[in-house]
Image 1 (cartoon, rainbow, N blue to C red):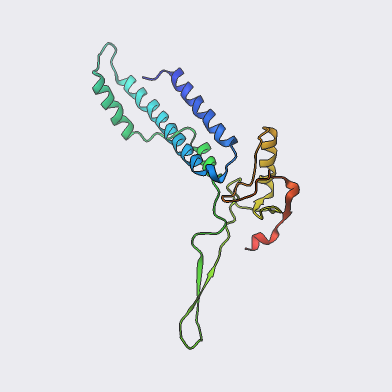
Image 2 (cartoon, rainbow, N blue to C red):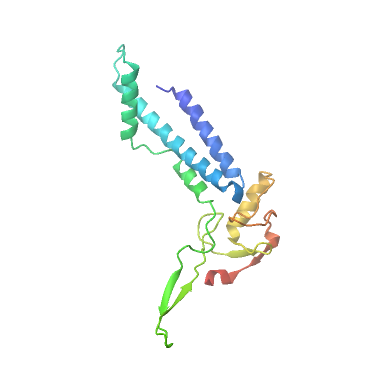
Length: 203
């Protein structure tokens, strides 16, 4: 079975990879690669947990001095993994990384309201209401104190934006631009470029 030191090395390697993802600015061109990296990390995280669960169980059941054919051990391992319900130790971190993926500014399923039409054709008129997403692209929660960029017009939560800027400056990250998908602004985020946007909460 995997030695404890081997598991520790793999675990630390995964932690380092997740930290790199967390510290990497998310751009539109790299969004698919970012998603793929998260999914691969999630698979590795779960597989490490299953390996630890199954291999420890096999080790405990094995009798000292008993030799097993490698094919039998492999089948026992595969069967154990398929039945194991072990979850990854870093599921929470991975969920937070997924929450960074930008959401559309406008919902894909607009609400509709049918209003009777008094016109001669007798057809009803459908009013489509565009619903703007209030999800914060940086923190994943709802935007409570909205501020808007003077350059691109996108809206963020004041507190999470300030934290995002402070964190990136502290790490000396070169680029920390608007996280919204399809945003054309290449300017680093700066609170001096923001204006209050209370009307956003009414949209």
